[in-house]
Length: 196
Image (cartoon, rainbow, N blue to C red; front, side, top):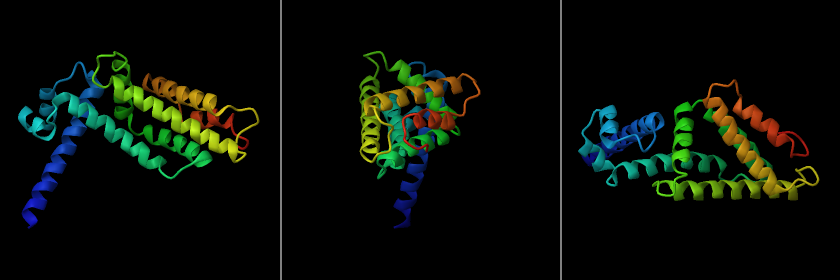
């Protein structure tokens, strides 16, 4: 009985190694400029071994990488509403500072995916819409709880915050001295009745 669990554990570990390599390769060369064989080389396995874990090839790897990143953020925001949700956005930015490769990967891929024929085009359109909707709802809940300054529109606050997050990440990736979490907190505080 221990055998299959051991094999499953090895298989899960190999899949995680492949995903880590895909993050590294996609961050360095983008989706378009990368290949399954390069990812396999980084892991030290054959291309067939990669395809065993990701039957859809490079596209399946791309989607797995994106879904893995989003699952962490969704988990962090679960059960948070209003002001608590908004505060957690700051904490997510704080954790991003220790994940340069992942942030870089996201920006490379999201830029590539603006092309309508890119395999992640619809994914990024849906994702950004979901983030904007969730953040707008959090600002609306904060307003209803009396946590927003009078006259603040939740949608405008969410859109502005999202643009600030994306912009600060790009500045940070380009080497500017940016404290993403604190700069985002400062930006959000302009909408709140009391600072975070």
